[in-house]
Image (cartoon, rainbow, N blue to C red; front, top):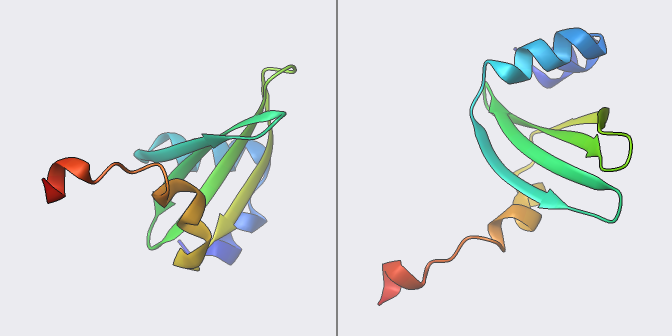
Length: 81
C-alpha cells in the first residue's frame, strides 16, 4: 500500500489497516494521544481525542524527518554505557 492509497480509504478502512500493524511509537499533545504505526514503508499517526475518546484524524507521511517527535523519546543510555 502507498500513502495515497491509504489516504483514499474511509475512516473504517484506515482503522482496519492500522489494527493489522505494529504500534511503534506514541506521543501526546494538549488534546490528543497520538499513536504511530508503520505500513509498507510509510508511517501513519492516529490521533485519539482525549475528551471525546475517539479517533479524530489519521495522518500519513513517508519523510523520516517527521519522526523527530518520537525519536526524542528513545533512551539510548543503556546502549552507550
